[in-house]
Length: 286
Image (cartoon, rainbow, N blue to C red):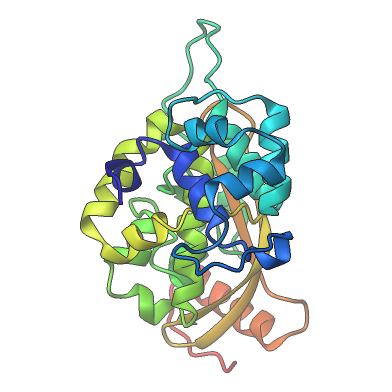
């Protein structure tokens, strides 16, 4: 691999290369009777299918042209069968979001607005927390930490997943959680590269698993879903979640987890909430 593959010095090329390698040439309409030495589509095949010259596409993938037009990107995305998240990610690599330069003073990036903290204090019966762009937990409900030790201020969700041995106990579906965590972080990093470059570099050095997943160039933007957790003294809890982007330049996101009404998970979480409020241990049946 080239140096760029390891450092992401050419993120556009690395991403395009990873996507074309997963396309089956025959399914893309490529007829080739020769023995192929590479996975997926060759550069020249992708270029011709997208209607651009092979030499120009090579310049894009090699990082010698970092500003292709939207039309070319859309043509490449069509051939590569990118989903909506991948298309947004590709465009963000070409024109990343910039912080507003309006000269107004803003709160520190790790400061959660007082109103949001009031809401969290009142949500005694739900695990909820706010994270920054690099997934630092900045504020949380009391119940959040009881359900998952990572869901409390001072922790980082991605570091917990890959560097804390408790993660594989808390997350029965650890492989899926890890893949989603990295793919989601990559999506955010494309929009806020200056903020997250050092954080990503540090994780790449400390976790071989993180590095391998990062180099797969998968992107992910999940705003709702379901997660299974092993909770101390309770057993397994399956909780749905919704995410809410908080307005402002800080890039804060609010996560709220909740059980399905009337389920055993609902009963268990209510018992946990009562015990947390009373300050007494409990062992609800799930």
